[in-house]
Length: 557
Image (cartoon, rainbow, N blue to C red; front, top):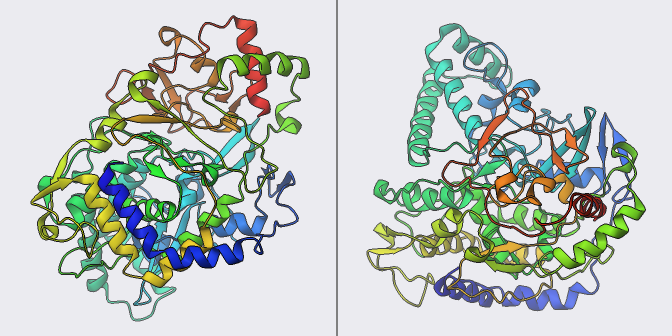
């Protein structure tokens, strides 16, 4: 993150000073209670939960708490059919094919939508369906088809295919009379006095918005399951859509895997490229930008110093606090088999020699643990550099922001062009400060004592974090280009160049997900732009027995 962006964070910190002072007085007296089942392995409705720090109610709350994402009218989503048949779009089998994790109805999810698909309401009492943090940050693996939930884990949703299918379903609903009548009939079951012409006009307008958005975010290389170029889509959402400047678009062509969130709230820095310092209000700022990436709304035009948006600031504070309680999933020996203690002992020695310099160990028993990520220059680690380069390169036209203060009320002013990151930080801070008291309360709610990051603003880094729970977060490297930990410990020339992503069955030997093709799996091709599997050649000279011992130890973390 560039120095100017750091200044904005410093300024926003000053604004939040009163919140931090209050927190100093209450922090030592406030402890988040753990539910009785928060650290207990249990099985319910055919799903095993690994005791990662959330009770059932907390898990449901996080899964279905909106942070301001608004994709389409909620009633439309409930009533909509697939484009090519009469199956409901939200049917479990269809959503599962898109990589979503199906879920039963509960008090937070009365319509039994998949994990991370939630209801949001605006000030006019209009209900929307949108995605939540859990859509991208909840994982699931299977062992002999037995489902194991991974709270805060790596999602395998096919984000782009979800968008494509939704647009196709809306178009088909308009042009197929029988499909339209069934759609209207379902709407009438929950809504009175429906004007079909108005509904049709609204759908037509939303289709136009989708087509415009998809054109802006088009890429030559598909993301597939479990990946998204969130930064690229955030930049386009603000620099193109919110500013209404089409020529600002840039292809979001550097997708990354959805990172795991256990321990993330305890780190000094987050994001794959270590771009986000994790001291307040940094977490609130970064989470707010995420909401804008997944169909949050932001109004930059015709405004004063701050900007109306759909970001649910209060919920962001609640969600962040919940993730602070999360711990890594432990190897499920009841289902996956017990680990070999002697092999673990041998592997621990190898880990200390080969891995510990970058991937530190975590004391999960300490609820206030402070963790540091190791920042490795991208040219040193040698992995695909497209993501870090895209983040720092390029300028955009500022349009109506020209002449406005970068720090909202003071400081330098925007010229006709500015760095994309500077525009995003300005807009996000303006959205948060449109509701200053909500922002203060969110900072109080989520505040944590983390270490200070010492990243050099002039260096492009990739972040090395602790790898506890890595067995449940396949595929690997920031771009998901290596399917198993075993493959990551091989020289680049021996790593798979193609494999399928979307199979949830755990590979208990190689550590990761199995790569056999299953229904609607995505083919990952490492020869395509942004998909390179080179770099991170650490531990690649181990003998086969040493490699297997190291894998056994890694399973135990």
